[in-house]
Length: 287
Image (cartoon, rainbow, N blue to C red; front, side, top):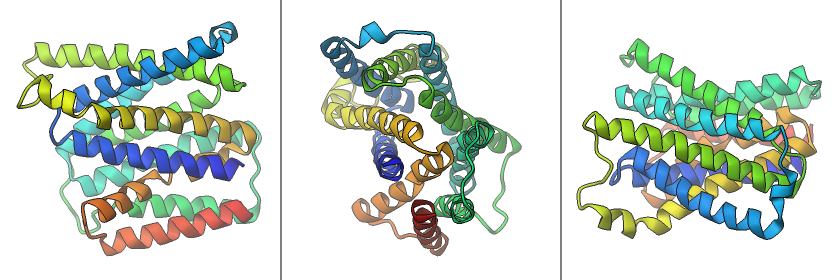
């Protein structure tokens, strides 16, 4: 079950990233984040009310608050790093955030078998290669590398924090709601600051473009929520090290979605990365 939920997480995150990437071609990135998260808050709020999840409020919700603060900050750092580029360096480095939850798992006592250790190494290498790393000396600004590493640490920290935010299904609904409310507050604050500095909140075409994109924005926000939920379940049911690595295969999903929908050709290094990620998945699932 751990492998199943973790692989569902990678599928959902990969599709959410793909959808978000398409939307940011037409709508400012921070607006995409804030609007998609507002939709998620509305849906989760209804679920929390319907299930009575408020009764499970406790100190562990601070983990959800932490995830809600760290997530938008990491995403903002990642977007800035992508702007500085090159993407072939930024994207693979960003996937190294998996090291955080894997390290947490090892510290709390996870002891994968030999095959699983091999699977962890092979899968992480596959994820990095699936991002299409620049291997021929592409110029890289030091700031881009630093921002990417900050983003990677943030992404990994969100995985570690959300896994600790609840112990029951209804408690998980409440934790995800709290996380998303915090996301909206932090992201909204960043959007307001951006507009005050002369940035744009609306795309060319105005609010009509955002309204037309609401179904896609809802998909991105809800897929991201669902991914956090399936990851939390995976981490609770089995070794965190296995759950974290399998959940971090989402760059492979994003690359394959771009190939299938946008007809983008996979570079040889990306195809090799996808193959290695598959091998690592098999080793993790059978080890």
